[in-house]
Amino acid sequence: MNLYNAQKAVDEWIKAHGVRYFNELTNMAQLTEEVGEVARIIARRYGEQSEKEEDKNKDLGEELADVVFVVLCLANQTGINLEESFKKKLEYKTKRDHARHQNNEKLR
Image 1 (cartoon, rainbow, N blue to C red):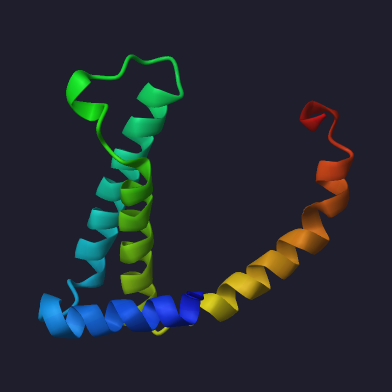
Image 2 (spheres, helix red, strand yellow):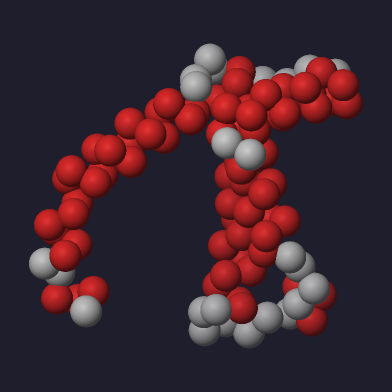
């Protein structure tokens, strides 16, 4: 599924199941909450903090999907074609960062 179709699927889901979009500020707060859940899993599972027993069954993929869902909601409700914006960003980063990363001794 490409980003355009993902945005469309989220919009259809909201209309069929969600009644309406939460407002942008609520969705921004939800995004922050979801990113926090991803950070918690990564910090404990891959970082130096110990993982609580109740967190060991949490699915990182599902939490990342929650982040993507809310990002798609925000793109929809603010009129952004995320697929087009992502393509532009990738082109920009490719031009800006190719030599920088290739020449970075820390990455070798």
